[in-house]
Amino acid sequence: MVLKIRSSQYRDLKQTFWWSLWQVWGLHTLLRSASPIVALILLCALIPSASIEQVPETGRWRFMDVSVEYEAALWESSYTSLSEEYRGKILPPSHIVTQHVHRIVSRILEANNLGTLRGSPRPPVPSREVAHQSSSGFGGDGGQENAPDLWDPDAAGHGASPGTGQKEWNLLVVNDKNTVNAMAAPGTIVVFTGILPVAKDEQGLAAILSHEVGHVVARHSAESYSYMKLLIFAAYLAEVVGFSGMGDLLATLLLQLPHSRKQEYEADQIGLRLSAKACFDPTAAPEMFTRLGALEKGAGGWTPTFLRTHPLSEARVKRLQGLLPDAFALQASACGGTADFLGAFGEAVGLEQRARSSWDS
Image (cartoon, rainbow, N blue to C red; front, side):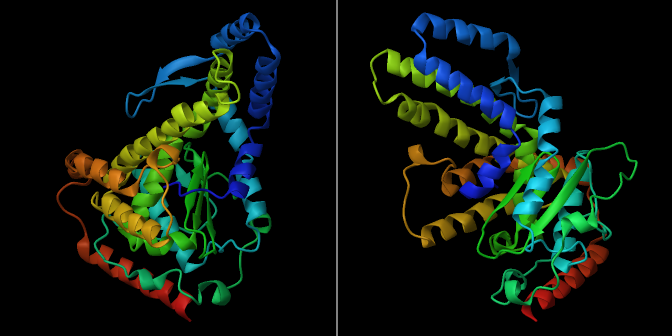
């Protein structure tokens, strides 16, 4: 779930796409100074390097001109950038909350053949979680002040490849109870402790993390940078046809924001499937968005839907509820009808108790 990423976070993530941004800015400058005929020639020159493709998971058609290889090379630096930004706040791999998040992420990645996590110890992954965990164990008032020694990612290093042949992901758990957010870039997942009360329990956190991984699976970041070029050209056309000074505003309201909301819905859909295949409860997703909606209302203020980057939580709940039958069918197919409930319960309860004591002590 991408929850209004702070501008500083978004700027840091964009820096890894410096070449793409240079291309976009160059196109913007040329279009502003070019005649309509020259602008059309520039657009035609752009098309051969681009492609119209379908998102494999949903079938949605989109414009994409960032290759998978290029995207992977650029995002390789995201871990370093994020580690540097949150230095002094990153919980160590041995911290009980990091282990808790690690276990959930591992389950999602491995059940969907998306790779493995590197660098932190992995507790056994139960076949299915049945324990109900209280939100009081996370993000309490004593969390930030009483956390143990924090982790220096550079000193710890990335760790060597386990030789699985699969993609390796990095996990950063940031001890910041005031940031209600989680995010993922290709190869890196970041979880802020402020999201844990919204998650409420392991099932809710799985819904959040599956949504974030869904963005990566669908390559939404690369798509957004590709889409920026179309937005710039659309803004230029609006200026040409007489909407002087309004091109950028119209492109944002009519194209950019609806496109962002569409990606969020898509990540919801993909994330629901990812969590169901990992044997988590599909109903946790709409329940989590119900809690998020209550949090948003409690924060005050109201933004019309057409001005939002994210859909209203109420709308997301309705869509997810409509997808639940397929999610349950996928879960039954992937997880079977039986599970080691006693083992899962014992492990989950023990992990919750240790996590709670680490935050409440």
